[in-house]
Image 1 (spheres, protein in one colour):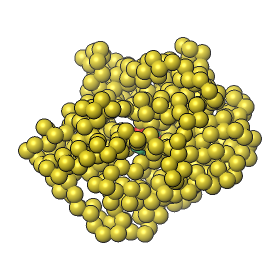
Image 2 (cartoon, rainbow, N blue to C red):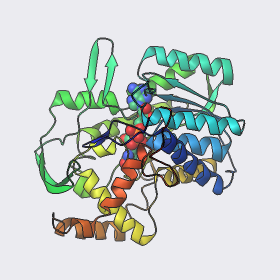
Image 3 (cartoon, helix red, strand yellow):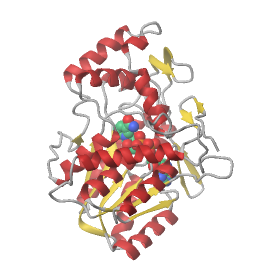
Amino acid sequence: MVVEPKVRGFICTTAHPVGCEKAVKEQIDYVKSKGKMSGACAKKVLVLGSSMGYGLASRISAAFGMGAATLGVMFDKPGSVNKTGTSGWYNTKAFEKFAAEENLYAKTINGDAYSEECKKEVIDTIKADLGKVDMVVYSLAAPRRTVGDVVYKSVLKTTGAPYTNKTIDLRNNTVSEITIEPANAEEIEATVKVMGGEDWEMWIEALKEADAIESNTVTIAYSYIGPEITHPMYYEGSIGRAKDDLLESSRKITKSGIRAYISVNKALVTQSSAAIPIVPLYISILYKVMKEHGTHEGCIEQMQRLFKRISENDLNLDDEGRIRMDDLEMKPEIQAEVSEIWEKLNQDNFKEFTDIDGYWKDFYALFGFGIDGVDYSADVEV
Ligand code: NAD
């Protein structure tokens, strides 16, 4: 069938298999262009949330930068006769194909990473194929988590008082004001359950119990801080509470004998970040400013740089013990320009002061659309 993008707000309900494959290949080529990493490279890497965004870029950096065997976990859907699969599904098929061409082990388990069954299946696979893993990347971004009979739903809200600021309505590219209502205690607790560190700790415990993890393993999870304009929405919002919990978990895991780190990454267009109010408008300004300064990076540039730093033990932790991959985003001169634009931004001038085209290009690319060299009028097998 001919596959076209069907965008509803911040979601695209179709994905292009050939475009996804080409986009994955471009990420692989980028990592390969940087050369093999030296130093302490992980050899057997488990990536939880491996099919898109930062998790996919981590898997590509581990495989094609470190030469590692990778086992991925994703929550994606294959295509059917008249419906496309998810982009994560096609990305993963592409990744596995390119890994096989270079004799790199790559298996992927499609299931709910929060569940006991998935943990068991992953551990059985590790025991059968790899023995033990020596790196665990925790890159889940999920709207919900089921524990027994309870479904916890994460919310993207502020905490404390309502917060009003500018946002962009991605359905019609209009800049307007939005008031974010505060999350109540129950919603905060649910968000922490979904996006906090409890499940990360459970994974590490399960791997330890099964003797499926090397004692010198590094485990890493991803967080975000960002500038003050986004703090009430993110850093001090319900998701920020979950990220505080994730940091606490990194300390507990480290105490238990496995080195655990939080890497604070740059704000980027991914399926998950597009859902957060205010943040996409900030991202479209940030893209413009960072591109003008020549310091813009995507997921793959961030993760290649992170994995290289890990292999060289060049972590340069901040006061809270976090790795700061948002160093370029948070440079004072970048943030000063972003704030200046933020102040004067309105519906009439936003095309001039934001890289909204770059935002949308990245958004479509997440689903395999708008990739150079792909014939979108051709029939493709979904
Ligand atoms: P993403 O939406 O691109 O990818 C999420 C991944 O999680 C996918 O592979 C998906 O299949 C998987 N997943 C979701 N639910 C799952 C489940 N129940 N079981 C198994 N797999 C599941 O997300 P992303 O933006 O790359 O986010 C990854 C991490 O990076 C998150 O912790 C996020 O907070 C963090 N982060 C993101 C940004 C950003 O701007 N995007 C910035 C800093 C940190």
